[in-house]
Image (cartoon, rainbow, N blue to C red):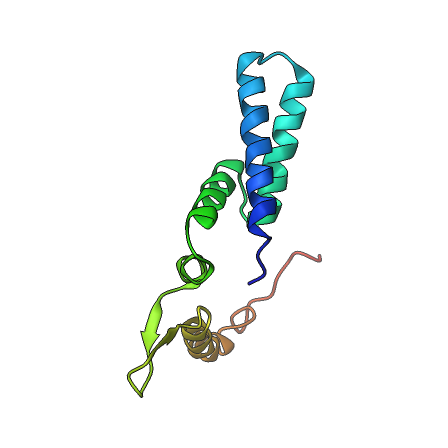
Length: 122
């Protein structure tokens, strides 16, 4: 997972908070609203989140924790391997195994049932 520099996240978070205060002080000011929304969007892109509130929460958490702790929170849990050592669990590994099992069952069901055809093209 690629993460931005902490100083850049801190700078963008300060910018977001500043424009938030300005916009709340004068809600009809279009320039303040546009800058506030732009700063929220920038945080979303930096933190990989879909909404500004999630991005702000993630940015604050990122700035408060160490990099390994943040990555562990975002990507998965720690798992013990066969030797007893703890290692980071691969988040998609279990899903890949399950989806492979599901695909085998779905292969027989693909397409319309025999004797029935789609009438969409007629």
